[in-house]
Length: 162
Image: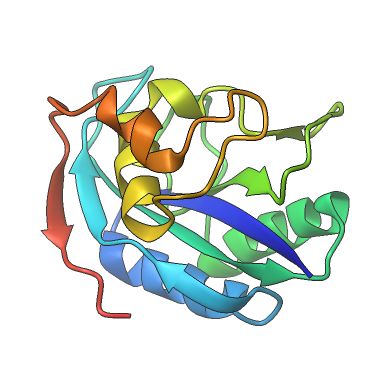
């Protein structure tokens, strides 16, 4: 079993409901899930859209990285994600942030996630749920990475109940 960390976001419809449904579906193949609180953040890229609800989960899986990516994409479909355009609104968006200490770059999957260190809406919930988790490239803990974005504009909207 490998420890995995996923980031989830939603800015269409029942944002909290979509995230909760995705976490429930993900728990079928990711065991021992720990979930951060849900945070509100402004959109990235195409900014003329509603704000996002974001969270991070960690847990353990025996899926390979490629199998995990397929499972994540299937979960997005089951939750009801509609393909629109890059950086556009999403019912649910799930990104694989870490897979153990693995470093991987393929056509469809890069681990660790290549832009996570510039995203406060990933780093702050990551530090909440896995403060001691070490980035496999930089060697910094999640807490150390989150310190860089201390003056972030994201805000906690739903406290973790797990």
